[in-house]
Image 1 (tube, rainbow, N blue to C red):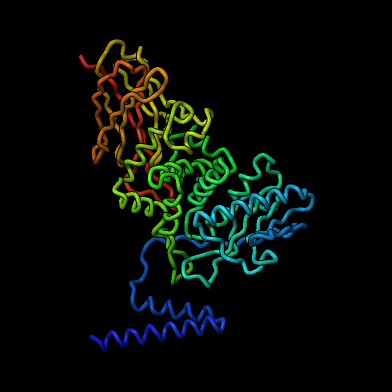
Image 2 (cartoon, helix red, strand yellow; image 1 turned 90 degrees about the vertical axis):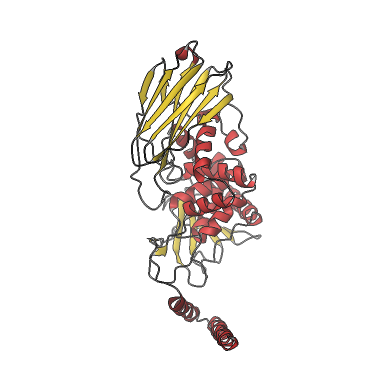
Length: 445
């Protein structure tokens, strides 16, 4: 055994020395080839899911003015005609975002090799490309998959939105650089949430409001704003699992990072969804319980008090509208729009509908192929929660039942129905799990 250990140690030492020599000679490819050879001898061939590497995009070439930060590796380029004060304000927002996200422990974007005229992270105030983060291609000198990235922002952005939009653009580029294998929808959701953390606004658009207006949508993949509406999901996870410090979401991105040793397409597992599931379960919680809880909490946005600081900051325009209204007992309603995985529907019944009844019975009948969550919430005249009851999540048979003992303070019943899907979502693949449901409510003699 000592002989074996000695040989392993010698092999490891030889690898280290050869790698150091390769780096000293600028032979980065040689070190990478050595690492690939080692992995091929010690690991199985990767058979998991893959995703295409981001396609390199040519940078805007018609920008005429550039300013560079004296404090950080940041540069702002602008089309001719963009005002200097707009560029300076964009730079201040960029510097602030960089400093705050550095302090929060997020990685800095990797160097672009002077593609923007210097080693800085480049923001282009340009109309030549749609506002987004773009890749120059993968870089070969990092251990984990990383990409060189830059950001483009329309110079027509209103002045009142400039700080938030610059922050979103920087965060999007940072995330593309940090994990080029992750889905764009996850990047947009995280960038919108980080923008709220830094500026108090969810991203550069109204995606969160649109997500509330269409609660049948999934979180992240399928969310409004090409994923940006999923910022609500991340705000909820942060509040529940790290007290709002942001560490939980940051560590999810770290957990999802990987290294692709072979082939052109990138390893796509673990992704952010599998990282969320693993982290939540390691905390002693359950992912589907989190989904169900947020489905109920989001009803109170703009209506009442919620302990989630991010969600309580949303105004009345972000209210969820009832999907259907029950006006009598007994009654039966069907969903008008199929629910996406993790999407919800809200059915309400006011006190005149049940008259003097003290007990009600409610049945959920969902379509097959997915699991369902069924919750009844009793609300008082001010819209605050009085009592809540949840049915066990459905199994193979998609049916659930709730016996409801009405509290004297209850003036409205809220039924929350959520499609829990049949498996963990995959942001890289289209979902085929949209399902409809039927709800029946009757009194008890």
